[in-house]
View 1 (cartoon, helix red, strand yellow):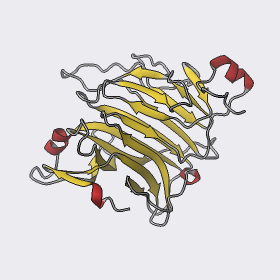
View 2 (cartoon, helix red, strand yellow):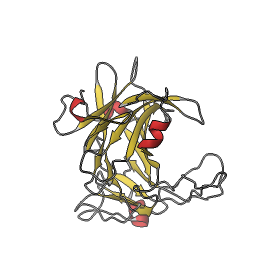
View 3 (cartoon, one colour):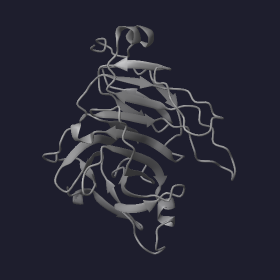
View 4 (cartoon, rainbow, N blue to C red):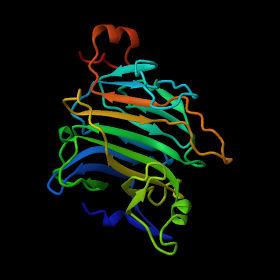
Length: 284
């Protein structure tokens, strides 16, 4: 999956500068398409998963106790709505984040977070279970880059993808050795867990407004869930800002956006939380 036409070097950082990129996971023998990341002309970031085999899901903006500690459990029925469409996550430059799909759903599940032009932060996490149920990549398409994550010797049953919005100059400042270059794919080590991840540096192409930032896209093996027997995906985005202006300043986490596919509703659930579909109720 060559990305030669999208390679760009600025300073000591090499990136993949493309309007659209498809993320795949696989082995040396086979790859499965997981999601698309698209940059809007205004600098917006869009994330969608057209390769998932199902259509029924739940979209939510669950609240969170800012003083809670330890693992957090979210009830997606809280501030949740059903849908029978695969939607996209939209993160706009002014910090407005929402789920949408033009002409198919109402843009009702939304929240405000960090602006892309002035801050950095987590854009999304996508938890994938049974990835072999996603659409297999058989041929690449023109007009887009591909970010392949290769697992050896076999594809794990559960994978987490993540994307973080970073400043170019900060990445360059942390390049090792100091006079070396980095990207467009490299290994990084988490400061908290000390785990090592493969990441791509994905940037907006020439002519787009937020060229001083880079989307750091990575993948890691995660814990499978025994109760999930088929392809499942949980996306989380719209996180509260985590960048602080003063040392020791506490970050407040009050909620996020999340989707879960599949989620096939019963009549009671549909009656209690409703749907965002414009043209029809979710299929039973």
